[in-house]
Image (tube, rainbow, N blue to C red; front, side):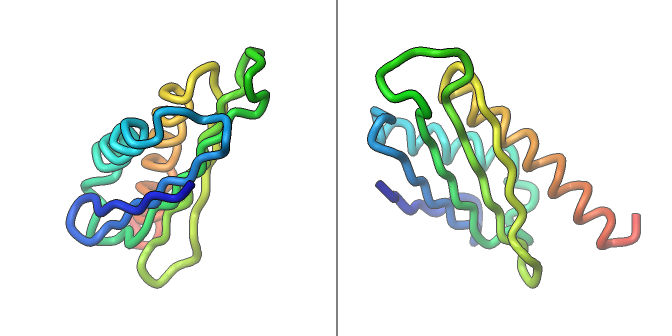
Length: 114
């Protein structure tokens, strides 16, 4: 179920979950906080972040079955996406946010000739 929020400055964050992910409102706030913390310094360059959270095994517990996919849209560029899987939604969100931060920082440094 999508929920759109506004993060730092102009960066919009949209959270989508599957039917197996619970606590949507609190989870959306956690996601927004994590994304803003990781990408806030890029808020003037990142226009939109779409978040997809899923529990691959539903009610069954099996290893790294929680998945977070983050897609960021840089102004004037194609979207950039990363995915992380972990044994909890919180770990998957943190892992994906870290990956996206590194990828965006590297991409922007390359575009700026650094």
